[in-house]
Image (cartoon, rainbow, N blue to C red):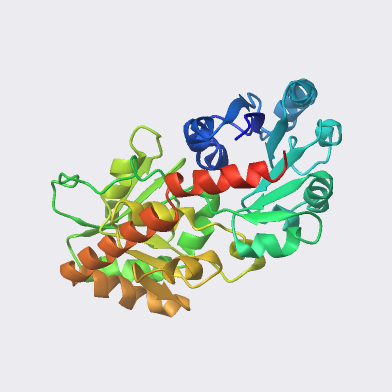
Length: 340
């Protein structure tokens, strides 16, 4: 099997797609003959808030993007994630071919989404995180569907009690940009919290939530950190992933759900997009069809420890067999070799 030298232009040190769709595969890809060099954006593809900060950021990101693209001439293949400068089609046109475009959410539906399609048209191959995304991009390029994988040697079930106070924990972990989904079921969560004195809501995110109904003493906020992300999820009794049934939500790759499952936490998730596909592999929790069902679903798991355990066991097995980085690394290797 021939060796391939690949340059991966990733979006940032702690950007989830960079961590989980590229970085965690590098060691395995190297062992399979794909020698990956990751070049991480230091300025970030998204502009900062504030007019002054954006004016300072723009020349930096332009120079950085130009410099990063010039490196592609030294490699057999380039792998990029989303536009190098958010929502724009810029230096991608100068990338040395062949190159692969990796997409893990519905950016084609966002601001200037047509530029993502332009990049896909130029790319030699597009890797999509789910079937919904693939339906769009297969009109413009060859496509492989590869879910965002979980490192099941890192995300593992807890062997100790992380919650010595004995609370049952309704958990949610993610970026604050997803708070709108959590807020949409706030009244249902409040009803559960009012029903039990030993239940709290734990939110792990980059900034604290601002609930209108749930009192602060019922919420545990933990600032997300790569050092504590696993133990924070292990603390959950049940893990929530609410979504609305929108085109944007259908583009999501269920990573929140998969990380809960990887640590044997039973899930309660909206029956939207890839969530349905994941649950088809085994009953790892409860699917929700409308917001009125959340209260009963949460209560049914909080009241049944054995059901939580069995669903958690199924979830862990599903992830290990279908979504682990060990499995997906091999598929990624095959996708890369279609191009070179």
